[in-house]
Image 1 (cartoon, rainbow, N blue to C red):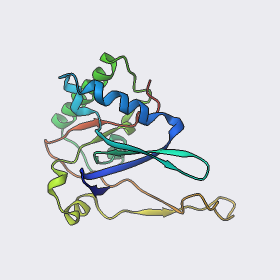
Image 2: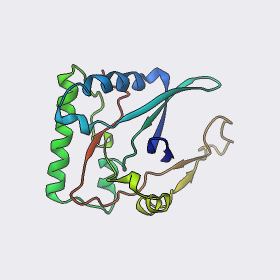
Image 3: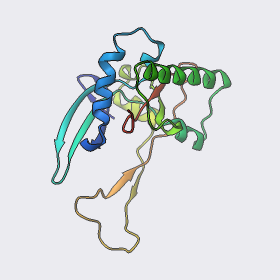
Image 4: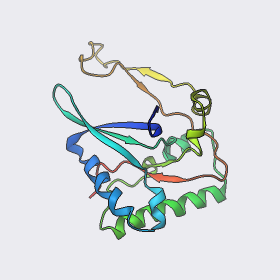
Length: 181
């Protein structure tokens, strides 16, 4: 997550061949023309641009920041009240209904593609955000045969942040449209 003219944002970098940017860019103007309740449950695309690498071209999606996924939440020590869970399920159903009403399909609907908005994140200082999300934890990548990594590969990965408690302000967000149609 980083801070920009939009406030805090999340960057997602995907190979252009996935067509995720195209899917989300088609969805944004169409969905904004309707008062459908699912509008608020689709992650907001704030900007998109191309990044040309040595072998591939990538789309950089600038999106509103969200917490880890519902899948990550299941694996953490955090829990959700039954009322908050019901609210989240209704919100996800509204997002899927919006897609279907527009003749679109998510293509990879699962708990790993349901995240949650961070309430009032732009009202927080960087220190407060880091306190909410916790210090990033990395894992050094190693090949199973102990050979050196290719120079273009990352040296480490960053684990998802723990799921912060949000109380009743839960707002589910459908993410990851790379397999959508």
